[in-house]
Length: 162
Image 1 (tube, rainbow, N blue to C red):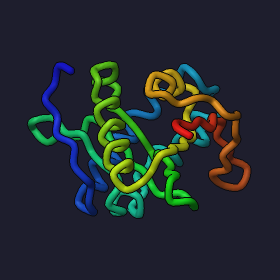
Image 2 (image 1 turned 90 degrees about the vertical axis):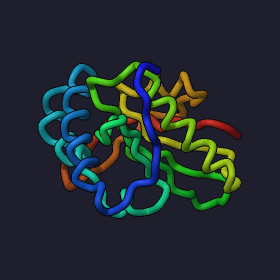
Image 3 (image 1 turned 180 degrees about the horizontal axis):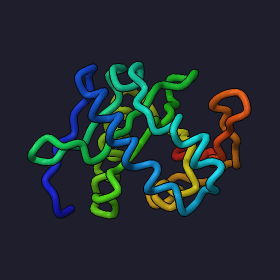
Image 4 (image 1 turned 120 degrees about the vertical axis):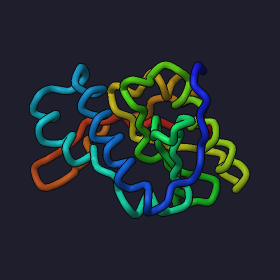
């Protein structure tokens, strides 16, 4: 990894920075894998920070030395204590393929494992599937996530661990 980064839990004061990171990342990164209809209807919905997630204590930001948000993502516990869901992971398009996303997910895995989590689920975008595969996730099934009435987002459910 070329850059020096710091990973820390997010808080309410980070919502604007995470919102801006999502807004610049998802449209740029997803456009090659999704049709214009999805880009116009679904991406504006998913490319927004979720305050309840950013403030939950298990959502993190990877920052450069100047404090700029380069990646973000987190986890929430599943219905069973050994399971967790990976949530709203994003990397700045100018900083992909530099190990920042991997460092962030490794941090998430370590923290969650320390709390007894052994299995991770995620709803991967088509774009992020190779990234998740490289981290040990396997594809389970394609899914259509309903974001609003008449607006769906195609994703792939993936799982890591057993």
